[in-house]
Image (cartoon, rainbow, N blue to C red):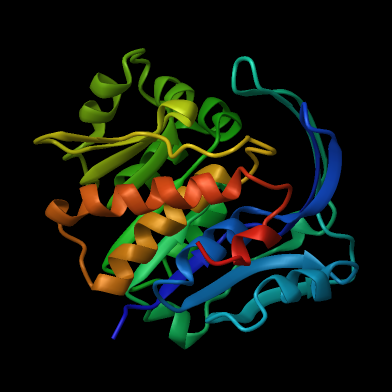
Length: 283
């Protein structure tokens, strides 16, 4: 029987502009993660959404093993993210947000979520991540963050990173966190500190790597017909990675290279359409 996975993250309206076109869809870190992990193991989702899109977000998970009892519905509107993606440099060229209901969320895990074997802390404010972690008894903990938190709350982000088993960051986030430009040295400098056993480096078109104190496993990006929208790719990667670990009841370093391959496959599914809904389609 697969382990259960808890994700604490966001449920958003994404207004994304890419070379393809401008499009608004439903997503958020919790949505992309859950849809990538659900084919492998049951997911218990925790986050907040506005009443204006609650039913649309519920529809994303209909028929899937995703427990939404931890999804809080607010009367304030759903967080809305505006982003322009730069496909030449694979960065966000411009972004802004309407916070909506997000600031009012205070995570409170039910008993089943507290006892789940796997926990993923998506890129939330560090105090929210800490609040979730303090309620969890998970044996395998993954965490993510963003440059905005690393630059403004570096000590808090480092504390959360070292309280996790697997840290998921891109190259620029690693540099911001460690001061080291080379991603291999940056990731290695963190492994073995605190609880941290592995750093998964998200490298966009170059794929991803799983760095441990003893070795580096690399996975090439999966080829797709065309990249439509890279929003959510990193969360999908984490969902595929931790989902495969949960489905196989494995949390040892020897299995992480295999889990990385599934993570990269999940990321490829996320970038071929706007929004998270298309991740429901079978691979």
